[in-house]
Length: 169
Image (cartoon, rainbow, N blue to C red; front, side):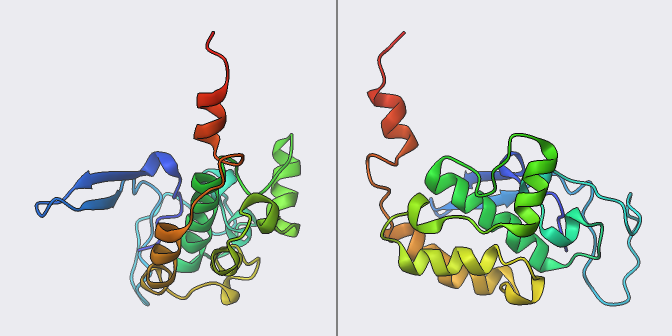
């Protein structure tokens, strides 16, 4: 299944019966089956762009065919945002952000100092060409979960730290 609209609002967490936190994906309104030969009753047509553009892969923004690797790109954007408090692609307007997604690379070292292995994983998630990304969510999960668990955002970069150290109004 290709979700095609992964964004923070569609990612939920809950506690499993064993007490461990689990991730659940919601809103499959524009999802499509990725099985070869499967017919999908999709609301979209080839060449039509749907979804939340801040989290879209370059191929999805261009209205091209998407597969699981497009969702991998969206996960990379969300992980970057969770760790830094900002999205990896900049621009003041809709057009500037699309151009950034299509042509620019995030500044990993500035946004995530001292996280070389995590940079490499996110760089692969956010590759412009789908063929350069992880082939599956399972493959990405194996690499990224331990890195996120061990990474500590420096206090000066931590959005929660900045918010808590600002004067109360």
